[in-house]
Length: 270
Ligand code: DGL
Image (spheres, rainbow, N blue to C red):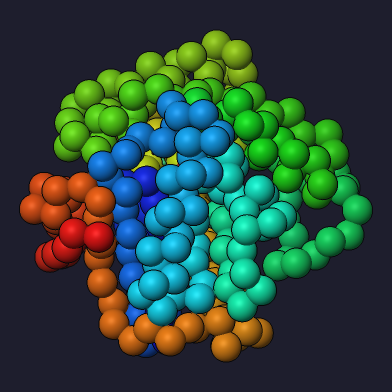
């Protein structure tokens, strides 16, 4: 039994950390496609091709269930994968739905018609590909009415995090939050719609102000995965070992991962 966790790079480690804490007995195989990050500046075909290749690699590790801990892949590729690519004995889940359910005050799997919710003005911070897909607005419209979403495409932040340049990442976060506030001066809530961004959560919160509720995905995804595995234990798959795989340079990726998670993480070449 092992569950696969995929991201274009280091961002999915924020999700991995939360799912490991929530499900300490489940082995997880993490795949970071660091050689091809960032995905957020790629077109949808490119993201689809890279994501399907990575997911196949996780299937080879015995992970019948793979979580796309990457909003860009969830937004640009998941629907197409679910339509005609995923075999019936495998599952691939994205990270959008748990977040939108939390924002719209819904229980897991509540498919009732869209209704009014408390949050009215939402700032969405995400990669250029996620913003242009409008997948977040689409999923939200299935569940809520009357919510005004202002999306800010945060160019450069993922590159800076992948390069370990946190000073640049902080400056970029501030300038993206300023740009958002020019369009929406008083958001009620902000969504960190890229799994890299929780690594800069404090910087987002400071720039937005303490009165803005910041939603990030890691814990929400961990809860919904625990619930899913309760209902579908067979999806735990055949793999038994945890592992960290990267398409990039294992030494460099391990060093950054260790810095971000504040515990020793050792990647091997995928
Ligand atoms: N962490 C990713 C996401 O959630 C990927 C960002 C990227 O590679 O541009 O969107």
